[in-house]
Image 1: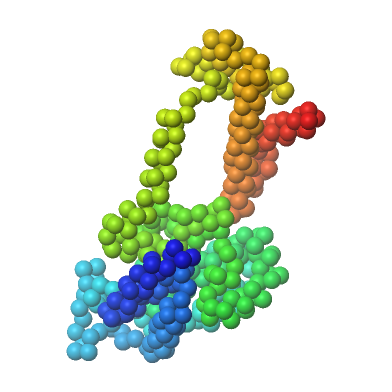
Image 2: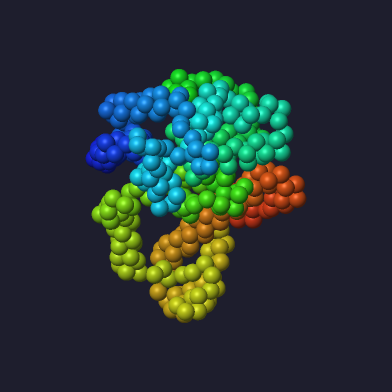
Length: 379
């Protein structure tokens, strides 16, 4: 955590500048990022202050116009930006209606996922889909610029991601109320996305339904083996890109060093005298079999002259180790492919896909099991 302290301080500095420019949403994004990197009382106090300010502002209806609702300056004149929104370019200057403020407030006051989506606990999958479609369009951050709309959109997406999954819905029906209550005490109303982790981000869900109708990044981060990338993280990425190329270079430095070390190690280490499959390019065309596990491998013409006795046993032990490592890797891939197909089948309700996934075999896993049994019998 100490390594993130400087970056957290930098985020707080950016947030303070945003507060001075009346860019509340931008300030909140960087303060929340600072808390994730290195939690401090200073950032926590600033977040609480901004949330209270936004909530007090949200209780008052925003001025509207009969043709297009926007914020107005004190003189009563509009200052449209390049994209047609009123204001000076920040999110806080974009127009929103009193109805949007009230809708965001309603979501924040909800006590569970069913109430967020506005459905009963006996709602069918089709009912959940219809409710989510309607609310996702209504609260998407590119359409709704009311204070707290982004958090409401996340809560809606998380609610649907959990309730549309039969296993997670069952678990939530049993324990969700307690978890949601604990999350609310710790994080305030509307922080439902922390109380129960969803496999798919709200933005990804939205793009599944509507074909990527709003701008979205193709970059993902991984969490618990599944892809997740929230609208908040995309916004932070765009903000960081604007801060200069030095930060990007620093972030890429470990990767560049790893690539360099890997390349040097490849140059320093000689190629093994065998292959698990024929490789005419290096002369590995002569078939051999190990004594213990009967693993097939291929060598060059001069192998028999160069490797005898203990050196031959060492080579064959390496052959068997590589063979087992390949089996483990292929077994993992087969399981991931099968689990991924089962997940998609359950998510889209495709019975044929589900049966096909159930019948999908894992031959590498079977061979790995047999090989490990042979090793146990040998030892």
